[in-house]
Structures are given as C-alpha cells and as structure tokens.
Image (cartoon, rainbow over all chains, first blue to last red; front, side, top):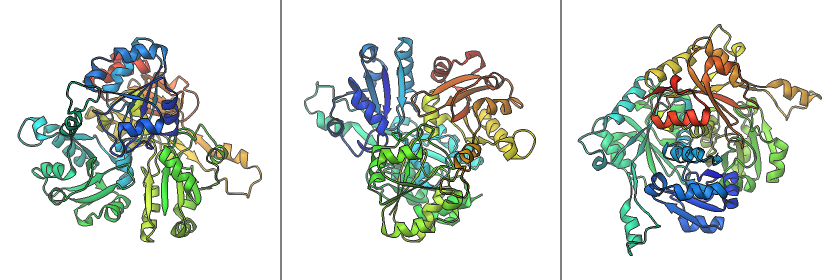
Length: 274
Length: 274
C-alpha cells in the first residue's frame, strides 16, 4: 500500500487529521521537498512532532529510482509526503501509475494547496481564475524577456476577464541523503532559491508596468500578507519571508474589488470592475 | 477575533491539525452547510469528536443577520466553519469584510477543496484547468437547454486546450435551528438535493453526446471514484453516494492521458492528446 499524503502549506500542523493518522500508522515514510517546501518547519521538527523517521528523496530518487520504495510498498504501508497536495503536479502521478503497474494499492490524502489559499486570502472567487502560470528565473528561462508561456497566459486570461495565479520559481537541489560533501548545511543554503514577489513584479513590469498585481506571501501561515499595487510599485517593495506568489486580477465583481481594496490595500481605480 | 476554518471535504478528520486546534480553542463555534456539506459525518458527530457545540446557521443567518456573531467576535474567539475552504466563494468574504469594518481581527485557516482533490484524483495538472462552472438543476435554471454560462465555459476552455471542472448543483435548505416544524428530519430529507453525475452527464449529453467526461465522486473520502466515458455513456451509469462532479478534459499531456486511462478507465481514442 502506497499512501500519498499532502502536508499542506506551512508547518507540521498544516496536514489534515486524517493525513496525520495515516502518516503515523505507516511502516516507512518518504518525502520530497524539491517541488515545494514547508517554510514553517524543518525535517527534524516534522520527525519529532510525528515521532517517526522520514527519508527525504531528491528528484532522481523519486523520478528515476523509485524501485526500492515501490518494492517496500508491496509488503508494507508506505507513506509518501510532499508540501501542499502530492498529486497536483504530474511528477507524482507517474509514481502512482508505476505503483498501479505493479499491482500496489494506492491512496491519496489531500493537502491544502497554494491555489486554494490564494483564492481564499485575496477574496477572488475560485471559479473566476483562468489557467495558472509559473514565472521562471531568467537564468532558467535562458532568453531575454518574459517567456511566451507567461505572457500568453496572462493576456488570454485578461481577454476573458479571468484572474491569473503566477507561481514564482523555486529551485531546491538539497539532498539530505547525500554524504559526499561534508559541508552539507552550506550546500543546502546555496541550493535553495525562491523568487520573491518584488523580483517577479520587476520581471513582469518590463512588459506590464501599470498592470495591477496582488502579492500573496506566506499563504497558509499564521501571518500571511496580501498586498496590491501596480507591477512597478510592487517591484520596489519587500514582502518578507517566502513563499511568495503573484495574482493578476481580471475583471472583478464588486465584492472581489471590495476585498482587494480592504484586505490588500488596492487602489480601486486600477482595478477592472465587471 | 473571528477565525474562518475550512473543514475539508469528507468527515470530522478532514480538517487540518491547525484548524482542529483553533476550533477547540474557540469560545463559540458557528457553521453553515448550505454551500456544501460533509457527506461522511453529521453535526452531532462533529460536535462529539471535537467536544464542543456548533450553532448551524442558514443562509439568512449568515448573509443577512450576522450581527450577533460579529458582536460576539468583538470580545470572544469565534470560529466560523464550512465544508471545504470557507473563503473560495465570496459569500463569506462579505462576512470577513463586515468584521473588518467593525475592527474585528480575522484569520483564515484553509481547508482542502474539491478543486484540489479533482486535480489530484484525475491526474490532470492543476495549472492546465481553465475557468470552472456550475451546472444548475433545470428547474433552478428555469429555461430550456444548458445555460450559456456552462456551454461558453466549456467551449472557451476546449478552444484553449484547457480542462474544465463542472460542479453539480446542490440545494440545501436545511435549518436545524428552526423548531417550527416537528417533522424536522423529514424536512431535512426533502430539502437536500445533490445533482448526481449521471444526471449532469445527461444534461450535458444534449449538447455534447460524444464528448469525453470524467466523473469524480466522493472526493476526499476513503473511497473516491474516478470514471471516464462519453457524456452519453456516463449518463447511463451510476456512481454511488454524493458528492459528484464532472471534469471535461482539454488537451492532455501524455502522462495526463496515461492517468485517465489507468485510473479512470478512459478510452485513449476519445482523449485529445497534446
């Protein structure tokens, strides 16, 4: 049995009660934190809170060499953990399908996602969001200007009056199972990189200087921040600890506009009111 | 202090650990179940699991007459509960803004949503969904055929290669605080109505008989069902207990198609492969 468990957004208490119970009942626990991270806790704190050991896998250990996890899941109850929900990016769909191919029963225990928290914290209705996009670091994109995937998503959604979530790039190469380098804690610091919302807004301002954006920082934490402004304005501010993302509001219903003005300090004049 | 807490999708253990702790620390607890319901539990079971009393409000008690809740929140820790997440429909954004206007501190503790579970259970990537829509009961729609809001959403998303979540209508008029009618349990049965996926597929088949759809039933429960077919095929099947929803896949990446074939029994020939 292989149970995929979403840890939610922030710390060891962001998991559901059902997920916690399944985690504690598992014979072995694996996790990956290269797709996202829990900013409010550490692997040690997760282990001690739930009184268990977690084997953290790097991308290769999940995507290329999952065989030992799958073999274990043939006879034992294996839990596989990620931040947010385990299944909303296809990376782990592949792992689930590999398990199916081997006749291993699988189960998904969902976690709260950034998408949910973004809609909830901004007051923008979930069914009025279009396709989401991810803004890569320029060095990862490897070309001048914004990727077409970003501008086309924003432009298409705006043409349809829809809101856009712009996820900001995360690069995490940390592999705590590696012992080849004795300075592993330095290694970790070097290899974690989160794009902050001011950097994201600056990249977007090159194309959309006067477009209204909303920064959502630390969604799911006890001190989330929601702050609106034009891309140019947001590029000049700081929003504190990660994780950050940006929302580009489309046409706003009156109550959505009220929420952005009241909760995010938006200037009503720069919003499009439906 | 007014803390909005999402109960998640299924039963008393679908809440996050953080949400449960905040719920148990509250001085008073209010809830509404007219926007959605927890199918795997009852109000009595919720109360006894968490060892507290819950005052369930009808729509008028939340949207028109929330003053006593807000007055209580000026001096006490008040929790307000819904299924899923409390804030992704604007109904409760209004309540939050009313609290802000009165200088009451608010906080949102998120819950797992049907949107998250739908992406996770189908293997369709969350960032490849377009706008969502809701299919109303024909008597609620009040006209022949499918509402334009539904067909336009489906058609626009398909034109863009995006997946569509079609939520199915829920009518819940149950008000457990009402004592005017002694046959209240009969009343409850009469006034709860969930559109099942076969009914939804039959309505959609009038316009889209050969379109591929995916039924997601009991998302977030221990026995979710994910089943693909054409709308005509799905209209002739049964999917068991509620809640149900439908997904209309757009262009599928190869791994998304693999997931629909493997997890939902889709016929690969009716999927559009990107």
